[in-house]
Image 1 (cartoon, rainbow, N blue to C red):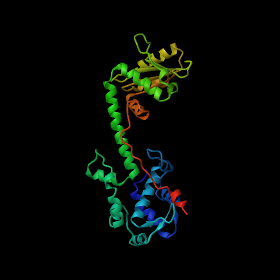
Image 2: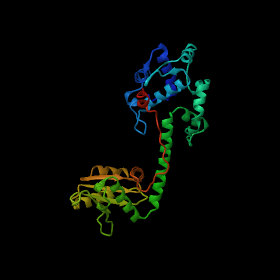
Image 3: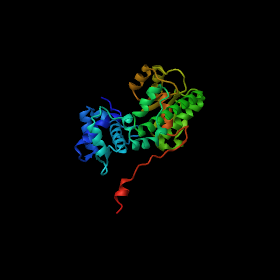
Image 4: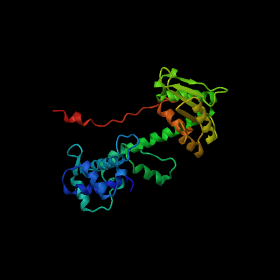
Amino acid sequence: MAVPGYQEFMLPLLKIAADGQEHRISDAMETLASDMDISHEDQDIMLPSGTQTRYYNRGSWAITYLTKSLLLEKPARGRFRLAPRGAEVLRNAPSRIDDAFLEQFPEYQAFKTKKRAAKLIAPSADADERVAVASDITPEEQLEAAYEELRDALADDLRRRVRDASPRFFEHLVIRLLVAMGYGGGQVDRGEVTGRSGDEGIDGVIREDRLGLDMVYVQAKKWDSAVGPSEIDKFVGSLMRKKATKGVFITSGAFTEGAQRAAKEAAVKVRIIDGDELAELMIDFNVGVAPADTYIVKKVDTDFFEGVA
């Protein structure tokens, strides 16, 4: 099964703590994975930030919400145990513990009131779906989902602007991007736009070393239509005539399946980049984009508190 929402972890975690003993969070997460039949592959899925697994993040937040509701307590770093209120809740044998259940506790209400404004709203969902989405993911996932939404909007804007640009601008753009990615040692003067009449299908070149002994040849097609296999074949022919071993073919549009197959089967190494990937690379390597707002998410420095006498 996929990784459950954090609310699905609440009752099982409370039951793990029912013995009144201290439990390490890591041990409890292993127990949950076994009891809920969560595969190792699903346990290893990372958040988009790459800082934590989605599984551990959701389990940790379930423990946080149970602690804020005074059902659990944390006697030490990375550990939890049952609190008196939690024992009382278990005696009533609830069938489920979720956000709605925790709303009965004023401590939980106070905690959630402070963060309601940050809830994720999914524009494409109806009202019920928005509530479900917002309530079943953790704050980190909400932030990252919002980030991905902003990034998608930025990529769409970049694709539109690239389509509206001139072919000459597009040639300069792709050379600048490849240099920003580290080709030619990241040195601007090693990249050159060469596209002109009789260019034999080569629009640019990047010298990988100072003496120009290793060259990367570039084809830039600012097309709205898809690039077919014949264009790949022409580019490969140009590379072979120059005795080149590698080339990059970038289009503002897309590649047909035949073109993708031709690039994979080419006698020389050809890397193809379509308009969608081009926009993503421009964002990743800061070409044509600039920082807007920055939000720094902080956490408690436990070493600081543990080191104070």
